[in-house]
Amino acid sequence: MNPLRRALLAAALVLPAATAFAAPLTMGFSQVGAESEWRTANTASIKAAAKEAGITLKFADAQQKQENQVKALRSFIAQKVDVIAFSPVVESGWDTVLKEAKAAGIPVILTDRAVKVSDPSLYVTFIGSDFVEEGRKAAKWLVERAAKTPNAALNIVELQGTVGSAPAIDRKKGFEEGIKANPKLQIIRSQSGEFTRAKGKEVMESFLKQRDKKIDVLYAHNDDMAIGAIQAIEEAGLKPGVDILIISIDGVRGAFEAMKAGKLNVTVECNPLLGPQLMQLAKDIVAKKPVDKRITVNEGVFTADTAAKELPNRKY
Image 1 (cartoon, rainbow, N blue to C red):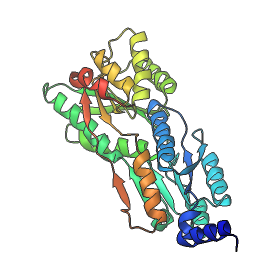
Image 2 (cartoon, one colour):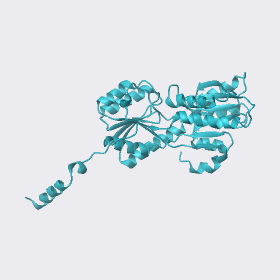
Image 3 (spheres, rainbow, N blue to C red):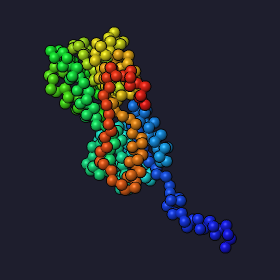
Image 4 (cartoon, one colour):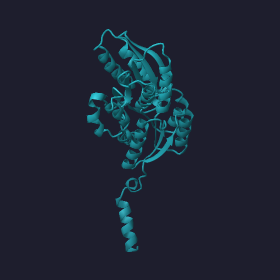
């Protein structure tokens, strides 16, 4: 035998075949869209983490439409990816496509938003925030603020997120639970602002035109809607953060800038930087390692008093 051929053959026998020719893990990821600063940061985190982890990422933007996500998931199934992850636009309507993924032997990870399905085994795990708790934290701040003027009644308007989405449902639930103990805190109007700045401004303009009751507080399900509403409040000749207290959720840089300017009173953090945890989860699941059914991230509450100091530390 040729000496060179003999050496190559010996080297091939020493290296395990699986190690020498192992293919990279492939993930199919369907994102809700790009409706906010939070979502943009979330997408960037996922893409960067996939690259860092050596995972091949097939990314699809649903543009806030469930039918687009269903098509993307079916495409991932047809491509035989190793794992599917997605942030669902709404909670319901996923049973059929998730059963298809399960039948194909492809594990599914939920990120950021949960689903309601008939069989919890249709997904392996959920990683994200506790949206109900975020609503409770927002209410806690308001209840404590209201305690400083115990005889005052406060009328609240609410900018909800996308109708049927987990964060919109849960953030509303948590907030209502939190203010229930104080009968002087009343939600007088509530409408979806679709998690977008433009729609938040539009709905707030509508609220302000209804002059039957004075608005004392705005509770927005995300910072982008709050920032849009701030513009509407200013255009109405009022001072946001002073004439109308503003509470929002997410903790994006824009919210900290608004707090620093005195236009927003408090934001409850919802961390979008889930990429590294998601990639490690995918590797563990494909390797058949046990994982928790729900993985919750740690988050804080930031007020206008701390905004200037915290702003340089924000990564999104």
